[in-house]
Image 1: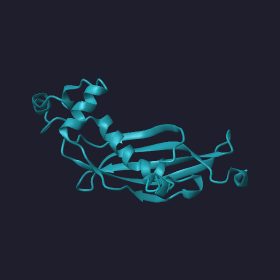
Image 2: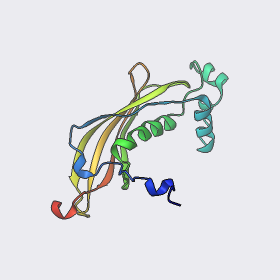
Image 3: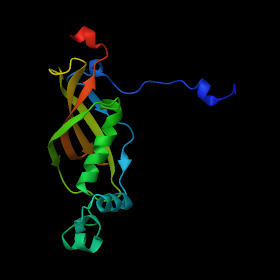
Image 4: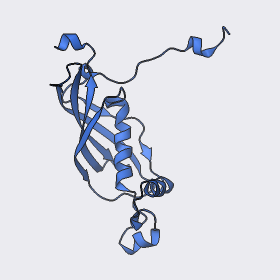
Length: 165
């Protein structure tokens, strides 16, 4: 099977290692993502988020909204997901989210984009093969207005752990 495409495939490494991050480094993440009504109602149902604002249009309008509200946890997950390719695609344990702020409700049909800045990096005191990187990620609407922001940290592998010790 000489023409097997798998024999011609080239594995291209993805993601960044600890040495690839610098404090102050900024990323404008790719594409963005439009959040549809089905996204937020399905997400709310699957996560048992039974707040009527997320799936009942009449209820949302009766409470001053022009439409159902996009579940804020979905919004957070979309923005976090947009940052993964640039910040944490290689993997490494996720250490947490801090200072999560939702600026205002958003509604189906919004296209969300994201930007991230590297805030801190340090070597792990308990595991010399890894470092800890902290980022500030923000999500924006189509007009460029911020709708969500948070800090997050991950353990990130060192490229050359012996040299760092």
